[in-house]
Length: 241
Ligand code: GLP
Image (cartoon, rainbow, N blue to C red):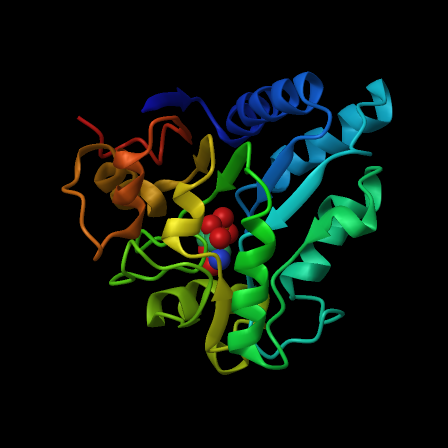
């Protein structure tokens, strides 16, 4: 595991951008695994700026997102679909048909199977991840078997509390379920790039680096991956030895 500790969020975003740019520049038809949440917003801003300034092309890039809430329409402002278009896809030249986001409505089991089958046609060159306070990756909550592929989850209380900030600070408005790539899906990526900032991630980062590998803390599975880069700010690194 390659651990990079940065001064602040800006530097985390810059370092993550450099890794992403290296892949997009060296492999124009790369497959990117993308994430939502507040952590990747700075990185996406830098990708957009770079596309605008340097014409970095996403024309042949394919993307797969990690997860989506169940029951929100695509155009709901807090759907991950809206998030991705607003923060990235609307501002780069990625082709609509190369964008893949899990869909959290309709026949859910079929949605999971179709998404997993679609990803299986590709090799994800880099999977971007944030991490939940409770160690979740994607929406794989504590206790998720490491063998899981794309599936429906019931969100943890901690996750619902954390995400209430996007839903008028009202836990009752946060969807209770989500569709997410499984841990087995995530682990198939060639490279994993995890970014985190802020003290509320310090325990999860401690577990990622020093903790025992266990399903109760999903992020610890990354210790088994051959190519993981972890970029954190000082606050998220504050529990590390
Ligand atoms: C969300 C997402 C995760 C994300 C995590 C942390 O619930 N499903 O993919 O990594 O929680 O979010 P943030 O970056 O906003 O702290």
